[in-house]
Image (cartoon, rainbow over all chains, first blue to last red; front, side, top):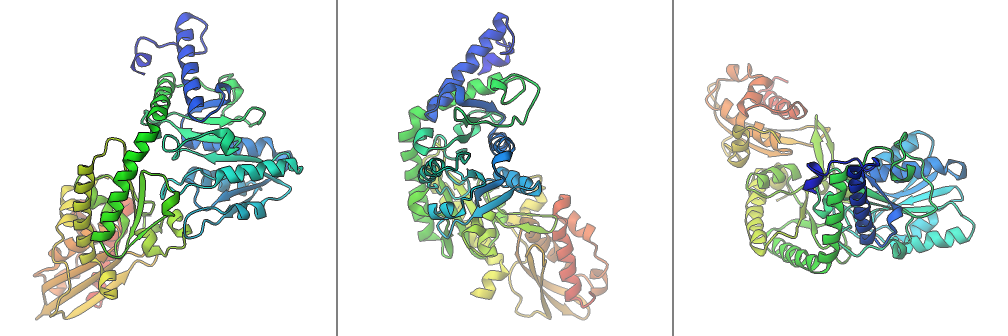
Length: 373
Length: 118
């Protein structure tokens, strides 16, 4: 990547040798990203990240299929970018069905089937959830979409947000049966600011950036060459390391959860345990609030996240945890622990120690704890 | 997260946390919108606050403001406690971002309830 920030400065749209050098690098990266998901290189559109990929997929498809119908199906636990686009389309007159996920955090294929109408043009369900890691039955939904298309619902398409899943599980667009799939470079350890949308051959999208011929007219604007080159390298490494990498984080995560359950009472594990990405653990701690725990851990060198946000006196408990049917207290007290390839058993031991101490300290402060004790 | 060292110290080592057996007054206030809760117990002798304890549930500023409030109140007369402002509570935790000012407002509201001056 670094040479593309210094000596290899060409614009891939330029005809001179510097430009062609950059073009060759972008096309090489395109092949690598395509290979990660079992696609053809010309089905990959480079964008600025997962959010833009989701925007281009959903808004682009909705706008290009407007004459065939204005109904979308999505789930209650999508990433905020998908939720945001669906909300925006709804305000402009599209109809949106948001499927429930039940206590285990999984969409039911029967619910998808029941929601499909003659004017449904798109189903957008994430491959794996970013907060609780639950893997959705995209392959089964893909089969359903194919059945629907052969039955005459010709314009129905399937999009899946695979931002969280890429590099964490085997991905193949043909096996999944999806028409559109979003990925982000930084989830594969590449720098932030690059992503890609897979667009199956024959699927038409209304470009959301107009005024340039880049990316086969689907995304105008000069490519971020260094970001794309890094994305390609990261995709290559992710494919090579997938098996052992997944086992490594699964081992760390499973021991972590086992120990947390043994050491800390009044916790709830979120998401169906046997259908989750291997590197994520989401736990609700009763009587305390996630942000307090987050900051307390941060001060001890442990970076975690919470889906809930409290700002300006309004509370937004995590919509994902709420969709599991958890009450506000459990939604507010949820924390996501994410394990990476560089984490070690010693890291897990350290986190377990500071976590137990922090939870105990915050619980001693909590009036909820006293009231319910 | 641009919290001050003073803020982090209140969060990590909260002052006067817990219940107060000899409390003269105990109140618990909840921010109805976000669910933050603060419980304040005061022991008042001859018009002076001689001991304070707090419990808090909510985002970190709620905990830090509760802790700082107990320090501000200990030893004060009721008359002096009544002049306390939200700005003083904010200053006592080393400042708060604007989106977290409500934590100091809850602390002040709880104090006023406790002193019967809402």
